[in-house]
Image (cartoon, rainbow, N blue to C red):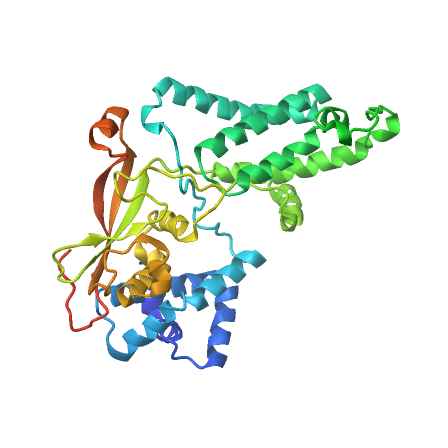
Length: 403
């Protein structure tokens, strides 16, 4: 953790610690939140102190009243930091993008991925790039080519729908294809009882937009798009002021954006396996309803439903528990045997009483091939990458077992 500034400002560090432990008066809390809202550096320090306290909590360094207070805040899902972060993002303060979430892939429920030949993967990748990079230019051409563009976009979205779960994103993209289809074409697909006289396509000059308007819009789109394109490839524009001025002007409209939520695709599938134990020696895994866990459990279809807990577990695996205080909160609830939390799971290995210890391990999952699946019944194989969350207990007197 880069806390050089905190070391030179112990009073500031203490103030942030007091805020996270609920020791500041309400007036001082509001003042600090406003300062964090306006100051990037101070907000980063707050995040660093929260990560530090979370680590101390898990390792058993926090004791007595401090442990109890921090536990209370954790059970409120780290409200202060989360509220400040939400406010900052909504109002555009700061330049950070939401954590990769950018995520992608959540549950990719795929059929037959383990058997996909290399040539098919390469061909599908080439088709995807063609549809996403070349086909969009057909939008500005005559109607038949626009129809071809709509068909290509729709085909890609349907393929994605069949091979992954992106909630409603694909359906929204399909809806955006409708403006590319004119009434004369859509009329053919209406039920006979709904049809009226086929519309006449008019080509009157007044129906066209004035060149001055389209040219101005083209300049705005080009400036806003180029700024984000160059930023994506970390290229500094020589004379960026006019382009940036246009970009800042249209940015609140949220109509000129960089490439989607999933511009950066992950190349591995990391999964967190949460385990409990009563003796620190024998560990039993909690099974989630949707995400991979049991190697013999077949992937299921849940789209467009997006199970929040399983979805968040996928994101948590991209970082560590210090960056995901909600996950520590989740484990605390398991140690408490919270019925509301255990109800979110497929299988609770401790139905009668919660365990004394909780830990989480990080695995890299892969699909097995067809021969392995027929032989062993396993859909997945996995490799242990390390400890995600060290063993800890709610009992301060019980030292955590060696991981």
